Image (cartoon, rainbow, N blue to C red; front, side):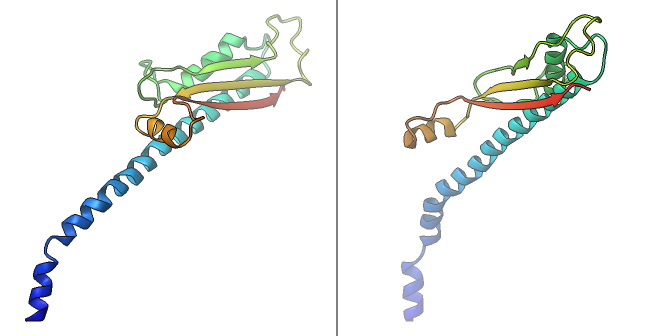
Length: 157
């Protein structure tokens, strides 16, 4: 009889416990998804900068121009229809590519950069969907969007 009374008093506690835990579970689930997208974009621009640097240092006479190296990044981060593989909410930011030094554009100076490095930097602005505003509540110096950057340095062949 006592066990039956105890069971009646605890009726509905599961729903209350679930209502308390659900926001935390959703926060963790969406946090994992959103930070997974940030890591995906970081990996994508890292590989794009690596591919662009590799294309730029491969021996060609004349060497690839800055625009051709930038096109390698564009082709790596977009499909044939021009849709970006990069994920950003609220903006359609395209990656910014910086190539230093400027590759020689003539056939006369083909071997001039053999001992020099080529640096390709790809910068991309990622806008958070949910967590940008949430993080800014706790960290006043946090800005949304954040800038992701990847730099690759390779020597000419």
